[in-house]
Image 1 (cartoon, rainbow, N blue to C red):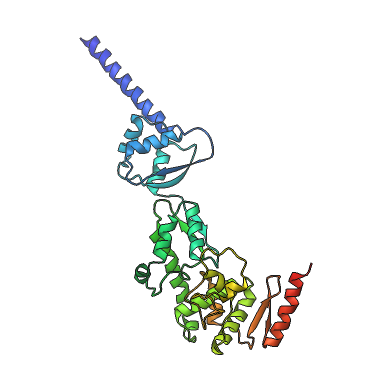
Image 2 (cartoon, rainbow, N blue to C red):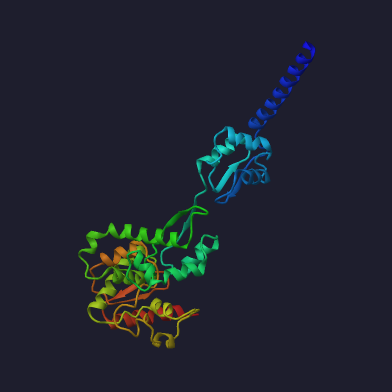
Amino acid sequence: MRTFLFIFFFFCTAVSGGAGFWYWSYTVTPAPGTGEIILTIPKGTGVRTIGTLLADKGLLHNDIRFLALVYFSGLTAKLQAGEYSIPLGLTPPEVLQLLKSGNTLRHHVTIPEGKNVRQIAEIFAKDGWIEQERFLELVHDAAFAKQLGIHAPSLEGYLFPETYTLVRHETDEQSVIRMMVNRFFQVWEGMKSLEAHNHLTQHEVLTLASLVEKETGIAAERPLIAGVFLNRLDRKMRLQSDPTVSYGIPDFKGPLTKADLKRPTPYNTYVIPGLPLGPICNPGQAAIRAVLDPAEVEFLYFVSKNDGTHIFSKSLEEHNRAVQTYQRKNNSP
């Protein structure tokens, strides 16, 4: 009887020790290889499925030891969904701690100044952040704009161009739009002192800033062009800005024709007096500031010098000479 008990005790000890070693070896064995694996864990994913996802990527073995490790670590309800960059070479406990931290990947998406809402939608849709048509529906939803504190027929002009940080599965059309509009209001708040000395409404400032943004990419010229446009508005002169014409033509492919310049649209500043119906793009901070703090000049005209810069004129005669000079240069063989 004693011999049996001894053998039984020895067997149990051996099994227990073997099981312990089997479990311990699992916790200290890193995944083979080098580099990083991108893993996405959808919201609502259970522990068993998480184990399968990790195993499929070669980050650990998925067997009962994974479930035991999660249980004994107290992480059953603490593993967070999201997109992770997980280095190979981590042990299973280290992998679980990373999933517990919620340190998901942050992506940076840059929206350049001067893009219109359709172009912005294309940028975000390209990498799957939004559904393009849904984004555009919201942008042109006046009721949604009102929720954001904007009383305009669309959000054109209010989607502030900047580099934004996005997280997978935490981003949709509404969140992207809200983020961009909130950033606009932050920038606008910083210009309160300039706004107080300006006779234009916020919407008019953005509309004019969008023209400035499209007319030049030269920083030093923005206040000059803003000054020209404001001088023309004060004198009841038409703004005659080519970008407003093309914006008002659906699916415009270019180049502009004389017929286009005569086509009546709410944006064609060759035809309508004053400002167009609204912004024609989403201007950056410099263009907005140029309108709020324009150069004090007597210029009423400008024409491209075909090198990215412009020549400015006070009279129509000067302007016509400049047009003739630079058109001739542009058309010369």
